[in-house]
Every structure is written in structure tokens, then in C-alpha cells.
Length: 551
Image 1 (cartoon, rainbow, N blue to C red):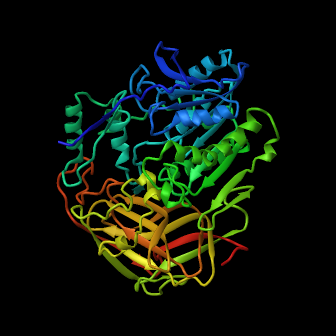
Image 2: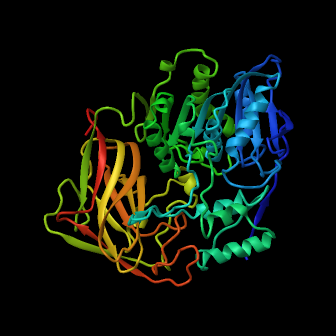
Image 3: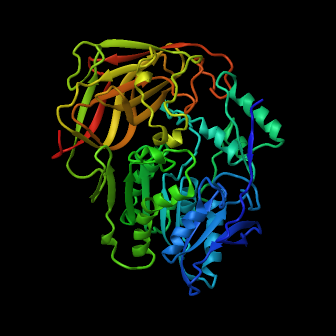
């Protein structure tokens, strides 16, 4: 039986006063109010709605509230329905729109509020902002969602007629068993040697003594949840949004999907401001010194990092909440050129002046500007008993570990293609895509593609990645792999490298090789995977290069 760590609510911050705020159905949500001690007049309010304990060390909300109060804001932090001190059913996503609306309504009626409310937060408490915005509450003046997406956590579903789909994260099934099992949190580790995974879940639920409604709605037959009961946020009245994405955030694909959807909605596009930083989901940065690369940061370390986390939001709210300045004072896109440590501004994303450059995988392992003329089939083995390991133990804190992925490329079940050392710096700015013609002797095949920056000392840092699942893989098919977006400088003397494999465990649920649903599969079988190099449909990766920059 796995060891289970049970975490309950932390003590209420001495800076806050807790209230039980009644929702439209009578459920009361635990809500902390932070008021600047030297200002009794009504003021602007920043609302944070989260499931991770409004008083817990993990999200350090009291320190964030302290920082916002120093700038004159009143701060409201709330445990979402069913979490920690709040009443109600513990259920992912479906109550956040109306509960957000009702909380804003309560705030707007308080004598310490001037009628102007903004929202801030990461991940799930970024989603709660989109949910609240979908309800058109007139007091909501601006939002600042970070490292999140409107479809955050949604299980992968097949589209009828499509031969490909996304690869499922393990966290999709584990999240509703940890943070969304019940009011408290429960943490445990999946044993990779024991199948099926679904039986381990049942053992944990039996040990806890109750089921997770959210898990049962996700598995074995996912339910389509009504995240936005009044219509999607992007069909609501737009509010100004400062939208922050991390280059190394594993949730970035959902953020970029929202960027594309917003661009298709003119009114929202006019109110959308994008910020892209060299960070991961847990706000570790590429430029962090070694002393700050610790899993549990001290209060002093957190306070030192709050300006880079919160000052862009405060500048945004100064314009769109307080009305000091003009919208043109806020750059439409602010982005970090990672590897050069340069914060840049542009009118759009990608910035003007980018062009595409395609590199081809060669039979000798080279990554070349020219494709091989002759077609060659290369193969590798996918063995469910010997999976390609995820490079980081915690995918959400990739930059905490900054793993060297060179050893992964040395495995026999990973294809590796490397360029010659660059003679000049190369700025990769914009989308990255791969194209491959693949097949398997198993019914379903997963394809993982990773783009790496290889230093002269041989160490390699992953800078982009993507994955796709091919259904009915016994017949060869061309697949496109979206590796996301890049803003990264490859230095002279470095090389580009591409890794190709069929597993990335434990971050992604591995294929059993039999075509069975992988979470409940018992039987494992090794598969031989093939990919085409050269010829008319070669394996290739297309990069966006910023023109006018070092090349």
C-alpha cells in the first residue's frame, strides 16, 4: 500500500480577517480579507480564488497579500468550494464561474471596496479568473491569469474520424485524487512497476475511506463538465487581461491554445496583453542563482522574488483598474529572449521579422538543412517494462532541476539527431513544428519530439517539446507535432539536437503496446516503431528564426 500524506488547512494569517461568504445556493466559502491598516477609505480590491489553501505555504498568499497591500490594494483570498475551510462539494471547475461572480458581488457591496475588483493568480487560480470573467460582472475591471488555460486539466478525447490525438498526462488522473479528492489534500506516489494503475487508485481510495467525485467524472468515461455555464469566457464582455506564459511551463500548450482563440475574437484581442517569461509552472526561472533553486523557499527568498512576479500585474492594474495612464502605456507583447536574458517588446506574437527554417533528420544522426535523397526507415523499440524516463522528477518545476537530457539520448530506444556547432548566435523566436511519417507493429503509437540546446561541454537543455498519439498505427501515417513556441538564443559553439522516442514516464501515461486503455491495462507488449528519413516525406523540424538577428 502506498504511503499517503494528509495535509489540512494552515492557520489563518494574522494579517487577515476570515469571513464565510454565502453563494447563491447557500454554500459558504471561507474568505480572507486583507485591509491596509492605515487606510479606511474604500479602495481597489484584488481577488484570489484558489484550491491550494489560502493560508498554506505552497502558494504563500499571505506574503502576496502583504505585497499588494503595500501598494494600497485591499486583497481577498478565498478557498474555492469544497476545499480546506470552504463548504460544498469538492468538484473540479464546474462551480468557479458562479462562485466567482457571487464573491465579486459580495466584495463590491463592502464599505472597504470602491466598486473596482481585479483578479490575479496562477494555474487553477488563473482558471478561476477566466471563469469569473465569463459571467460579465460589472465590477470586474481586469484579470491577470498566469500559467493556465481555460481547458486546464481536461482529459484527452478522440475526435471521430481523426487518426491522431494528444497524449494523456498522468496528472490528469492524479490531480483529482490529490488536491480535489475532498477538502483536505492527499499526496502519494504511483508505483510504475505495478499494473494496472487504476487498481492502485482504488487501493488509495479504500485507504482514505471515500471516493473522489472528480476522479469518477474523469475516469473511466470522462464527463464533459460545464466549466462556463453562461457561455465561454471568450464570448463574454471582454475585460483587460495580462496573460502570462512560461517558456518552460508544462501547461503552456493550454495557454497558447487560449491565445489562438482570443486572436479569433476581435473584442477580446483588443483587450489582450501577452507576457512570456523564462520560467516554469512553479515560477522557477532560467536565470535563478543556485541558492534559490530549492523546493521549499524561505519567506525571505519569496519576498525577494515577489517584485518580478507581481510588479507587471501592478503596472497593468494601475492603468486598467485605477485609470492612471493609457492602455498604450502597456506593451502589447512583452517576451524574454531566453539564453540572452533580454526582455523585449513587440506589437504582436510572433514579432515581425521571423522566417521559417527547416532541419532534417539524417540516417547518420545529423540534423541538416538538406534532406537525404533516398528514403530510409529507422526503427526503435518501445518497451512498457523499460520506459524512457521523464527528465525532471517534477514536470511542473523543470527549471528547479534543469536536467541534462544527454543521457536520455544515449538510450537505444531514443533517436538522436544533432546539428553541427553554430558559427554564430541563432535566435529562435516563434512556433516550432515537427513532421514525421511513422508506424508501429502495435495498434497505438505515441511519438515524443524534444528540441535541445547542446552546450560545448556536451550537456543539453530541453527548450521545446511536443507529442502526438497515432491511432491505428499499424499502417504508416504522416503526423504533425506541435512543439509550442520559442524565444531562445542558441549561442555560437552550441548545437541543436532532436530526441525522438515513444514514452516519457511518469509525466505521460505510457502505451502498454496492446492497444488497451493504458490506465487500466494489465498486459504489456514491446513494439517496434518506425519513422521515415529522406525521400518525399522525411522527418523534419521547422523553426522560426528572427530575421535581422545573429544567424
